[in-house]
Image 1 (cartoon, one colour):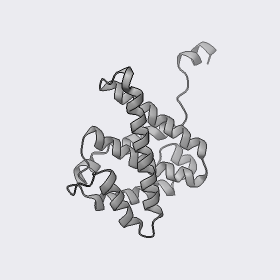
Image 2 (cartoon, one colour):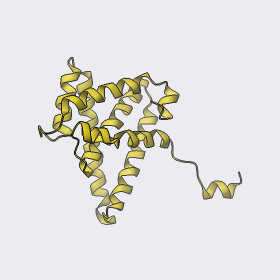
Image 3 (spheres, one colour):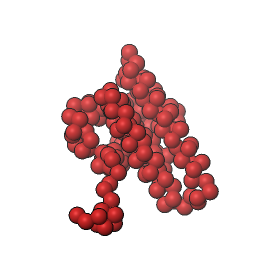
Length: 168
C-alpha cells in the first residue's frame, strides 16, 4: 500500500470493531421489546452506556487503561456524530457531549458499584431502575438486570483477543 493510499484511507481508530459490537448489542430489539427499555434517544443512549460499561469494567479488571481510553474516545466520536445527525449545531455540540460523557461516567460508576455489591443482582436492578428507567416502574428492571448479568458473563468469558474483536 502506497503512502497516498494510506492517507486516503487511514486505518480505523483503535477498538473500532469492539465499539461496533457494543452498539450492535445495545441496539438489539430484545432489550426494548422484552424489557421495556424506551425506544428513544435516551433509551438507546442508556443501553449503549450499559453494554459499554460492562465491557469497560472487564477491561479495567485486565488493567487495560489504554483500551478504556480508546473506548471512551469511540463513545465520544459516536455521540458527536449522533448529535450532528439530529441537527445539533456546532455552538452547542460541546455542551451536549459534556453532559453525555458525564451521564456515561455516572452510569459506569453506578454499574461498577452495583456489580461489586454483596447483592449484585439486587443492586444492579436498583441501578438500572434509577439510571435507565429513571425510577419508572413500567420497565422490567429485574429482567434487564438478569440479562445484563448474563451478558457480563459472556463478556468476562471471552479471551482478551476475542473481547477486542467483538466475539462475545
